[in-house]
Length: 205
Image 1: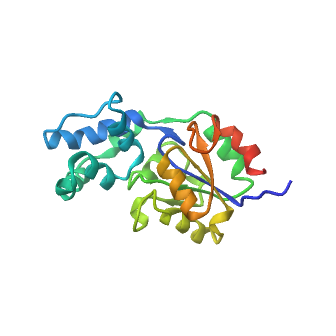
Image 2 (image 1 turned 135 degrees about the horizontal axis):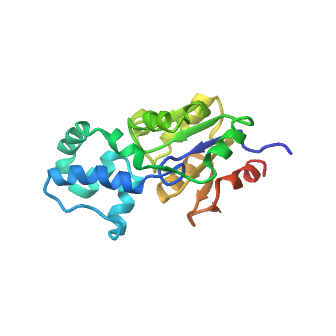
């Protein structure tokens, strides 16, 4: 069967990795600096922001725009590497990367920042991906389409040839605005999958 998509693009947090514990620990260090209450999973909207937004989006949302510059400066002093061992790889991810990488280019489009290459190295996943982009590589993070448009450009494809796997409204909106096919991983925001190996069938449909 001829594939209708020519490349698969993954979001990072919540799709490739369960990073909720690590992300909250990281952002709570910055909140402590400002004397603000820490975020935990019981605070659904604040925790969701920590798991889906770029760092500037999170700091602005939790602390206000007036503290954004200082929060970014404080964050530069925090070594995220200490939190990487708290991440866990989503079930089936390595299997699907192994199979899909023999069929098409793979890419990452994440609102995460400079920690992304180190995370891939830590889990020995770097070689699977042709393009890895973070919010630092584009002018506007998701939900804007910039990062997916840039992935398509670097792969020499049109956005319509990309299948983007995400887990949030930010991912869905970015895909719709870019014109990509969107797959919702363990989330009810679109064509849903609950296990990565389901991508193998969807890629050819």
